[in-house]
Length: 186
Image (cartoon, rainbow, N blue to C red):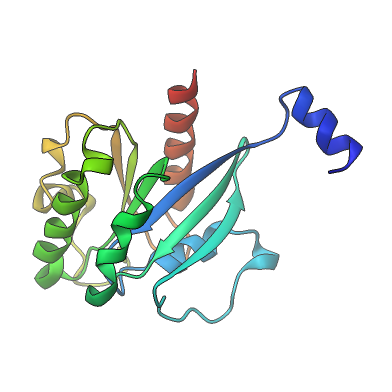
């Protein structure tokens, strides 16, 4: 650790590191969202489906995010719970054009919310109603209704309409998440 790192740490200037779980069904756009949040020089040109999980990092104005991008394929979803204890925030991505699997997304969300490592914690959850650019996409309000988000009373949550490919709606979500994490620390 260099002198400037030590000095900034002593002065409290170092960015706080936050562990975030990025969850959602396969093909919802989780990896694309995380890729878009990284600096442009660190973004991947080719996005491939996540097998198991990957770890990515990006920074906001005051936080350093370590994001666990969890595969949403059915056979890997049981791995999610092994990361719940260390998660300080959750990003849950929904393909707003996939009406057929909205029920599956709701079931996975309900399982998450009722897990012992999550249930009694006031962990912020950011929902991205992704793929808003597609013709069959439903609004973020409709996604909220289909997932019954209004029933989440014990955790701060927010839903953002997003288009991960263009990056639309992502900064609004990260700003909200950053505010929630910082207000929880004060």
